Length: 350
Image (cartoon, rainbow, N blue to C red; front, side, top):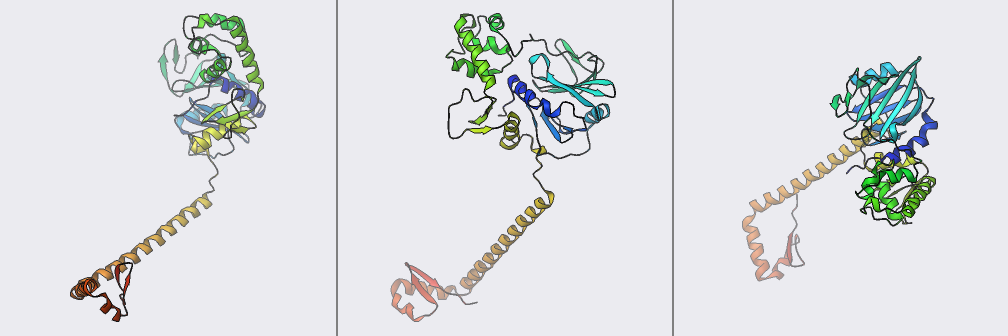
């Protein structure tokens, strides 16, 4: 099952890559699949698979002619300058603000549900949308104002009061799911401070809340990005030292490794393929298969020769077998007959 990035993963990623792409000019956008996009900013290529992941990859190539939706985006955003990239309401919504010849466009990627891509003007009026539809409390159709899903905005620098306001008679992990962390990290933090995630939220003590916040602060300072047990983390705070841990120097490098190399969900963006080398590899495989077939044909011919000999000399073979059973010494006079490991071996000359 594909593991999607949490809101905290998106936060860490954007903080890391902002210096690389903000201020760069948008060149082109490609859409090899309905849910897979590649945005080119000079040498940087931003890969986005909705609603799952985002990373910068150098292992990419261009694709076929763009679809109508991507062609629409190209016409509006061509050579536009990326002014800002951020999360909307600290949720899994990525918003890119472009300046295109004194016109502002907002390109929005919704990384939840089935995912979506929306282009709006500077007043948040929808110009085009990948998956059009009317949803509860909002309409994602051209001409309508873009409204993100209604959700309380809690800053990444939340405090004890923010946590207390979320606690109720539900499980703690359910109460705190509105924090901009994601279930993966919530579960790790609660277990780290020895709080049962299925404990009733209203029973969380002040000391537990303080420990929770301290642990989150520590997590943000641990800048080692690790892959272990088929999962990735934007911190090494909760991980015991084991031999199968892979440590990455940047979170983007970890995301690229996980989604591109481990899961292969973005196989289209791999550009390690040199087409000449690829063709030569195919030619070698075909040559090996041809050689194998020739050997099989030769083997088939030998078997046919044996069968033909047996059919033509069935009476003689029958006499030899009878002699083998009754008096094996008499068989020694024949140069082309041997007895080895209890078997009668007859050498047939071509």
